[in-house]
Length: 130
Image (cartoon, rainbow, N blue to C red):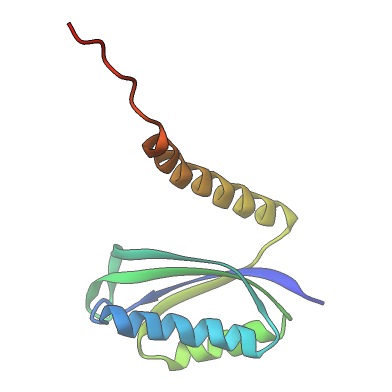
């Protein structure tokens, strides 16, 4: 039985941009290799931590929503534990209401992103010359 999950991990802040992309690619690839489907990804960027973890006060946050077999979550979390780049992680199973809310949030974000582009395409009204 396939379920939908949401996982957020915090990577160490000493990673370069390419190292962070490599870490994300590793986990997205792991999901796909195990017959999972990535529904959505979002880079939350570098944020301050509420408390120091391994003497670090900030970290790179990344969200991945995916569909997979429930047994796969243990494999994913084992990989998180083994990866020294990952400070913390959380994976949760999403019920139908959480899935609907996540879709609504994505749609709202997409509409907000499209809004400035639509405004840029509108030609300003010609002002009357005095």
